[in-house]
Image 1 (cartoon, rainbow, N blue to C red):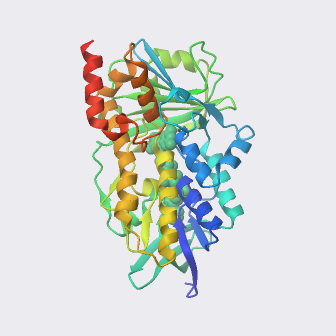
Image 2: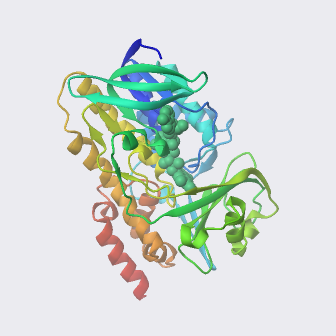
Image 3: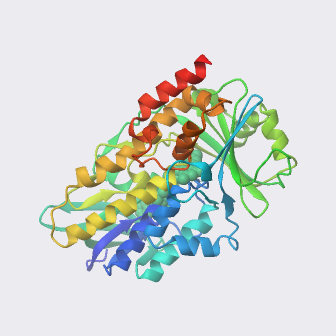
Length: 417
Ligand code: FAD
């Protein structure tokens, strides 16, 4: 075991989008930053459809330019909206018609390429990034630096590091929630997702490759599918539903294809396809924590709360958490007192709670009825479009400000007529 402790201003656990954005910002502020990542990049990750709101956060982090400059070469698919299909009903939301100001377009990305691009840019800004390093123990003390025990997975050696502030961006690794007993049950039931990548030309005349396609299972509206095209002639396909509806003893491929085969429109859109990335299953991904911060640390992205994949909010929330947390970290490093609860947790959770309202409404079908309502009033559609484009922190939107009440009222209107 190495006894030499190397000290950093900030250590970040995880090099996904939240870790990369935080590292970029802190390195640009000339702080001594170390990102510890247990995997070697490029590595697969689920979470491939971005929302336009996240382009603003990428810009704040100094990452938008590199994403846009490399989009074509890396096969990122231009995205300007979401299309929905349920048992013969089609509807689509064009994100450029949203009520909130800000970008109306974004990309669908293969995360191995996207995440590598972001962390390389953070490195260019001056962050030190070490792969194959797994954080195993953390010791926090009010009056001395935070100490970390880290395993080098290549030679199994253990290293001691210390920092003035620790950011946990470990996603589903949930390092601090596990080590500090911060786990808190999610208010969503255990759901599963089965997914794969396919090669297909998606030539169906109704299919718009600039939009994610979300289709609802014909007999069980709690089950839904995503089809996310990439620009290189491949696509991501997935099914999501409660464990009790999806579970199949025959594994991930059976779980996915048994349900896809129930959905004729999705099959028609898929056309001739070839599976190029094996089917995979994730169960029970929704997670929450008792607190998003404590003395000397804060949780970013999925290391805090993760809701559900249905509105592709994960990367947007991850980036938002990073751009909110870093200015507070910088103030704290300067010796200023920071009210993490009111300056970070409460405002971050406001947007997460907005998404929560609509995710719940999706599964109890109230929001599905609003989405598929054919005579939607234009201004209401623009406000809903803002939510779907990720503008969940825009308090000028009544569907953000009073999300539950607004959803209830508009659902009643749609269901009455
Ligand atoms: P991550 O991207 O998970 O990165 C965390 C990193 O930490 C990983 O690289 C990991 O290797 C590393 N790490 C973990 N433990 C340790 C450790 N002990 N030591 C060192 N490193 C460690 N989001 C969207 O925006 N759009 C979508 O379409 C979408 N679809 C989804 C579909 C499904 C089925 C699921 C489950 C999620 C989906 N998401 C989607 C959510 C998205 O995947 C996450 O919200 C997003 O990746 C979170 O980013 P992050 O930076 O918080 O963590």
